[in-house]
Length: 192
Image (cartoon, rainbow, N blue to C red; front, side):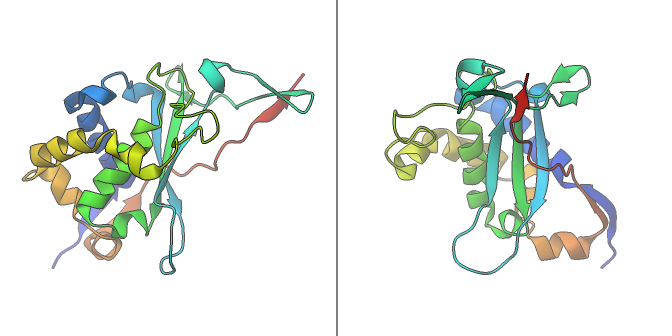
């Protein structure tokens, strides 16, 4: 079997996200130009895992500054072209890529659902105490389960599904060059 020249994992996942946002009404507010998809590494094996994460680039209600312990902090500005990014989404190699296609889609929908409905750089706030997921992850995931099923049907026999069905060993053996955007997770920095 001959190997293809290269694959851009960030580019492929961006294509999946763009199609989700185009197809699924709950994600129509997302501007893909203000999001970057990154590839991070984690070890395979072991129980439990992080498959993906969303990093918001702003604070509550889109504020660029937050006060914590008497100091003010902001997130570093990262530009995509001339626009500041509002969100970074990380997917982990190999754990995310070794999931079945359906689970990969669930993880992508889960991370996208964290994005604020106002698309202001903040997260969707689900509760007063458990802000990110509300009272349970299962309930959080049920918020988008119908649209996820419809999307799976929409892509069932196409190139997006072909990509999602590849696991890490198939990616490593099938491509001479594997690329993706790698970026250290940005952290808040003190401001004067």
